Structure formats: structure tokens, C-alpha cells
Image 1 (tube, rainbow, N blue to C red):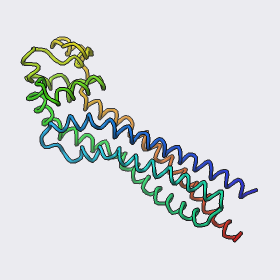
Image 2 (spheres, rainbow, N blue to C red):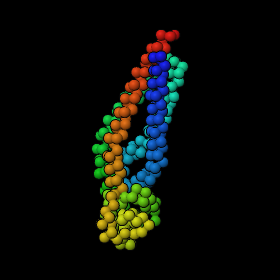
Image 3 (cartoon, rainbow, N blue to C red):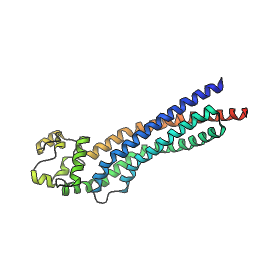
Image 4 (cartoon, helix red, strand yellow):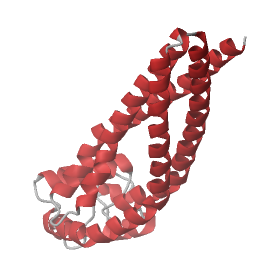
Length: 244
């Protein structure tokens, strides 16, 4: 009876781990597929900090971790059903490693805000220089900025002033449509001042800061599930040893 209850608990814990793996895999794939726009924007900027590319690799890390959790969840369920001491011990060892990695990752998320702020300051001058020298000319940078501003409903790096003196501004005397909420039309100075659309990277930083604590909280919740799963797997391991 007790063993049966432990097996049910093992299925519940591993089901949660399995779902977390699916979620991590899904988010990772989304980050990887959506990172092309960000990287495309930064390719035109000189002296781009290495940290930008480190942030993009988070998507690949999430894909790897999500896949790994799927495998671990499957391993835990099989170990419980077969009462295999080898599989249960392997599961316990893997969960212990994941637990320490998860705690470390949650701590990193708490301090990630400082990294984002530092990155924001390092990029600002270089991005503004690139916009003011190239935006409006027929090139990939202009296309990428237009796409990014339409998709994220933002304007420039920090605000509409980033386009002052750009080829587009000098030629038309106006600003890109997204800067006043009209993607397919141009904006006058009066319009952009009235609407005051936030900058793309300002908006990105805000999103990251607003969600960092939520993500960290989820990570600690997963850690609690991992501890419970380790306890159950070790009890099943000991019971399997008594039967053999």
C-alpha cells in the first residue's frame, strides 16, 4: 500500500517535471526563432558587447534543459514502475544535480536586472549612432528596425529622438510611423511628441525586469518539486533493495 502510494507520488512529481520540460522547450524554441530580429539589429552596431550574444544563448540553453527534463521525467516514471534500483539511483543523482543548477539559475535571475541595465548603457551610444547614420537608406538595418518597431510597438532605441538627423529624417523631415502608433504612415514632430511611444530596448528591459522575479519564483517552485521527487525516489530505492 505504501509502495503503491509512493509510485503514484512519483508519477505526479515526474508529470510536473515533464510539463516543466515541455514549457522550457517551448520557450527556448520561441527565443531561438525570435532572436533573429534582435541579432539583425545589433549586427549593424559597432563594438557590440559580447553579453548580447550570451543573452541570446539562453534560448538554446532552455531548449537543452527542456529536453533534459523530458528525459528525466520519463526515467523517473520507468524507474518507479519497474522498481529498478539502477534507474532510481540514476534519477536521484540527476535530480540532485538539477536542483543545484536550478537554485543557481534562480539566483542569477535575481541579479540579471543589473546585467540588463549595464548592457543598456553600453549599447545606447553605438545604436543611436548607427540609426542616425543609416536609418532611411535602402539597407537591411532599416528593414529590421521597421519590422521590430511594428512588432513590439516601440520607437527607436530609447525614443523618437534617436532618429534626429538620420537619412530618413533629413529627407522627409518626419519620423517613422511606429513612433506615433501608425506603422504604415509617417509622423510629424508634433505627433511623436504627443504620443511618446517608448523605445524598443527600453521596453525590452522593462519586460525582463517585470518578469525576472516571477521566473525566479517558478524556479524555486520547481526546486521544491525536485526535492520531493528525490525523497520519494530514494525511499523506493531502499524498498527495492529490501525486496532483492
